[in-house]
Structures are given as C-alpha cells and as structure tokens.
Length: 267
Image 1 (tube, helix red, strand yellow):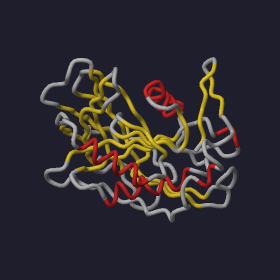
Image 2 (cartoon, rainbow, N blue to C red):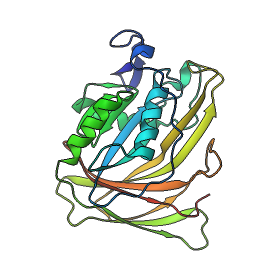
Image 3 (cartoon, one colour):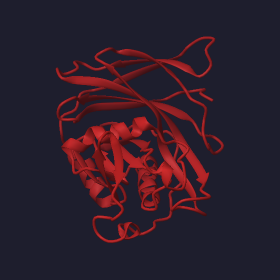
C-alpha cells in the first residue's frame, strides 16, 4: 500500500508502506478471471465499490483479483456489488504507464481524501462511506454488508442506442427524488482487460482487470446524458461495456443509490 501527499497541485509518492513492505499486505492471490455483466438478484441493495489501482503498483494485483471476484461471485448476501476500477496516473512515471490511467481517476481519488485517511494504492471506497486497503477482501465484504443496511434511493437506467452513431448511447437516469445536495454521475465501464506488463514493479506478469472505469462525468441534477463508448484497450475476446449511474451526496460523499446496465452492441 502506497500513500500519497498532495503538495502544490502535484503528487508526492511516499516510498514507504504503512506497515512493512507493500507486497506483504496480502498474499499474492491468483487472479480470478473477470466475469461478464451480472444482473442484480431480487431483493438485493446495489452497493458501489470503487477501487483505485495501477498496473505500476506491485501491491495492486491482489486487489484487482478481489474486485474481479466481487463482480463475478457477488459474495455478500443482501447486496449487489457494482465495481468501478479507477486506474490512477501517478504511477505512470515510475516504470510502466498503465494503459487505462487518467488524471480523472486521480482526481476522483483525491475527492475522497479529505474525508478518509489519505490516498494510496490499492484503495477501496465502499459506497462513499468507508475506505480500506483494496486487497483485504474480508474487510471489504464487511463494509459492503454494513452499507447494504443503510437506506438507499432507487436508481433506474434506460439505455438507447443512437441511430446512425456507432457506439453512442442515450442514457436516462431516474430516481424517485434526488435529495438536496446530491448529484448524479455516469461512468462508462470496460468489463474486462488483460495486459502483459514488460516493465515496472509488475514486470513479467500478465494482469487481469474487471470493471475498468473508462470515463466518469457528473450530470448534476439532470436526468439524461449521451455517452460515447471509447475504443477497447487490451480487451480479451468477448469483452463488453456497461454504464454505471449513481447518486452521491456532495458533502458527505455517501453514495445514495447506484445502478448498472450493459451497453449492448458496443464495440
């Protein structure tokens, strides 16, 4: 686990881990293959799990495996887990540029920093309520179970392909009543990815990923937006795309409700 300090608009990576070497945070679990889009089971509460990760970080592959299992196995009773894996860009200059990294992912992580215990990789934020090391599966599942007991608003999605515009979709998001102080956000997600990493801390490894956030936009209190599916990057055969929409309180950062739907026919 690597922590960050924010200074003068830049990022300073603190080289030491919080407790011993980063690779000792969790056993190097074998990566579970990312699964396809999974529909919610009746009676479950959708919970958003955000993973902040990087292919340049040697502590991150176990967390990527945990995220993949959350998607495919849905291990928490009463919850339907929706994952967004944000690939941050501050590792890119340290040996290997993550092909999915973005400044937007780093900014998203930074938006949680004042309310949590700083920024590091791999970091998981559960429903905007709690954060923990992304490889600690048991703690993550406990946080998901706890979040599922909280009241949530219902979020519904209608996705329509735009005629004569390839890989373009109109997304309509509805909630019974968006609480004051809340906003709606919409993400486009590449369901799977696989990369053979030649350099950096993970040199020589082939890394699998699930639920890769390719874009994330805030639409405020509006209910409709148009999304363009980006070109797939390092996508295994059969990889698809989906859309995730969620309501989030601006002040507390709590996620108030979340939903997902496949983008049928994309790419």
